Length: 110
Length: 117
Image (cartoon, each protein chain N blue to C red):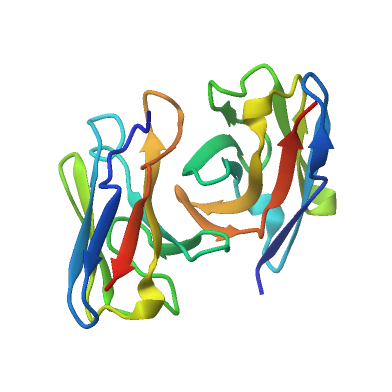
């Protein structure tokens, strides 16, 4: 259903590290920059990572992004309860001529 | 401060129409592409449409192509989404957002569209 594939959920304890994967194809992730978005409960999404690995001003360096081939990864270290949110990857798809998102990953900080 | 504020959501009947508006401020609106994204209740993000700064290029998701029309008025710093032939499955929160180099970097708070008889 979603062009980009993410795990539905991940969980880890406070202070630990978690990674969220985003799998795509040669027409999207491989050719274009990947962004990551954080959506806290009841709020609008917020840009977390752009251009694969860059953080907008104000985003803590606990959040990192990387890309290799047709996959991208979001990493979060030093987990806090306030990080509990849905996380989405997104990029441009050259074949579809449109933005594509992953289905979202719900992060639970146990 | 960059702000995008949507308006125009509400209740519509299947087959009906609604026009969403988005007022932008805090940045040079005429130099950026803009995007509409929606989120059905309890679901993920769905990109709907993007329009380049001068309206030269407009892109639509297949799910809304032929039914929705995006436009902008750079003199008014405004973005619009005309939604026709609405379906129950169009029920969602609709977000207006600013694009920068392929990233959606500023999102509005969203406006709820409910399509129901």
